[in-house]
Length: 385
Length: 254
Image 1 (cartoon, each protein chain N blue to C red):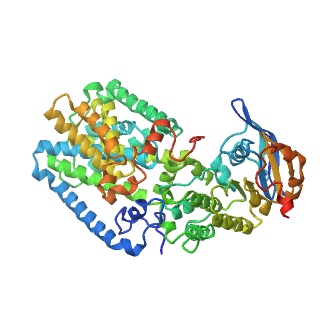
Image 2: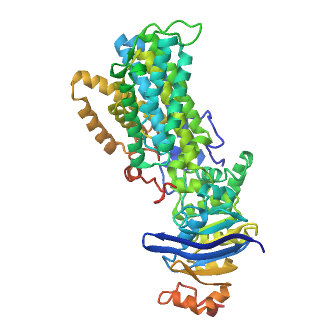
Image 3: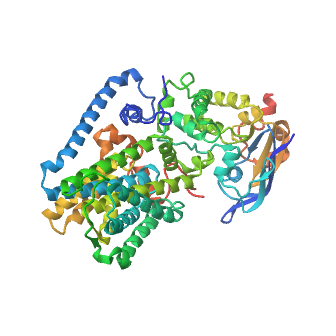
C-alpha cells in the first residue's frame, strides 16, 4: 500500500479529507484496507464535488437573486470571511489564537482608502498595497506575538487590535479620525476593464478575489509548509527537537496571515467605499473568532463558512431584534462550544471542511485546555523557550 | 577515542529543588552510555540540559569541540543532537510517515526524505512488513498506541541523522515484542551514532551500555562498566530499600 503523505502530495485530484476520515474515525485501530474504503470515498468525493459546484454556482448567481442592499451585505460578509480565513490559519493551523487580525485588516483598509482617494488605484494595485500593508504591520508586531501562547497570545493580539483602532481614531490627518474616510471612487478591477460601478459588480469582484486568496491559502496549507505549521500546533517541543525554529515559522505564518487580512482590507474599501474605526472594533475581532470556532478552527474553509454565517446572522438578527444581537450571538457561542466541540464542519461529515478539524477544532476538550491554560496539546509544560 | 560531548559543572534548580548538581559528564564518540538512578535523580533534567530544552544555571556543554551552552534546542538538533522524550512527543494530527519526514527535514534532502522515513518506520516496526499491520504509515499518529508512539519518536529522532542520540526511557510501556525490536534496533545502530540512554529497564541497559552512570540527587554516584556497577557498594546504597528488578540478581543469573 502506498502511504499517503501531505508532504509529497500537494493539490491532488482527490478531495481534501477523503483520505483521512477512515483512519481518523477509528482511533486505536488501524484504518480499514484501502479496497474497503474506495467506494465510500468515491461517493464522498462525488457528494463534495456536487456540493461545492452548487455552492459556487449559488455564490455567483446570488446578486441576481437578491436586492442590491443584500448584495452589498453579502460582499461585506465575503470580506470578513477572508479575515476569518487568516484567523483560522493562525488559530487552528499554527496554534496561535489571535484576536488581533483586525489590525492588519485595518492597515490594509486605510492604506487602500488613502491610495484610492489620492490616486484612484485600480483593484489589483489596491489588493497588492493592502497585502503589503497588512504584512508590514504583522511583521512589526510579530516579535510581540510569536513568543506568546494561549491566553497570553490572545491578550497581546487583543491589545494590538485595540491599539490599531485607537490609532485609526486619533490619527485624523490620515484616517479621518472616528468619522472615517469616505468618497473613494469606483475603480476598475484592472487596467482596461470596466469600472466596478454597482453592488453586483463589486460583489463579483470581491467573490473572485476571495476565492483566489482562500484557494491559495488552502493549497499552501497542503504543502509541507502546512504540515510544519500543524507540527508547531501539535507539539512544539518535538519541532525544536527535530531542528525546526518554531518562532521563525510562526513569524512567517503571522506575516502571511497579515497579508491575507490586508487583502481583505483592500476589498472592504472596494465594496463599502467607506472606512471607519468601527469596522475593526473588539466586537469584530470577537465575531471573527466566534465564526472560526463555529466553523472549526483547523479548517480554513470551515472558518470561512462559519464566519459568513455569523456575520449574516448578526445582520439579519439586528434587523429582527434591534439591540439584542450580541446576546443571541453570545448564546450561539456557548451552544457551538457544547454542541460542536470540533466545529460544525467536523460534525456535518463534510470531509472537505472537516479534514483539518478532526484534530484541529478549537474547542475540543484538549484544545480548550491549551486555549485556556496557554499550553499546547501534548506539548507538556514547556511550550516556549 | 575522541570526546563527542562534555558537560562540566552543570547545575539546574527548580525553585529550591536541585535537579542537577555540579554534574560532569563525558561521552566518547560511538559510546553507548546509560544513565540510571532512582526517580527524581535528575536524569530527564540532564537530557533536557544536553538537548537545550532547558538552560543550565551554571556549567558548560561542549559538543564536537564547540561550546553549545548558549544554543537553543533547534540549533542543537541541527548540529546533530537527536532526542526522544519520556512521554512520547509526536505530531498527532499528521500521518505517521509525515511525522518521520518532517523530523528528517534538515538532515535529508527533499528527494531522499520519503525513502529514509519509510525505511525507518520499517526498522522501528511501524512499517507495512513489521509488527504493525499495513497502513500505519498513512494513519494519523493520533491513532497509534502508546508503545507505537514511542517507536515512532525513536524513528523521528533517527530521521534527524543524529551524531548523539539522547533516549529518555525508550522501553517504558513497550510490549515484549516491541522491546525486542527496540533492543535489536539500538544494537544495530552504527558506531557513528553515540547514544545516551536513560532507562529503568536494566536488562536493556546491561545489554547495550559500554558505560553506566548512576545518578542520585542530581549527582553521579558511580560510573563504570555494567559489571563494575552491579558490584558497586555505592550503587547499592543509592537504591537501598528499592533496588530495581535485575540490578543485583544479574550476577547470580550470569
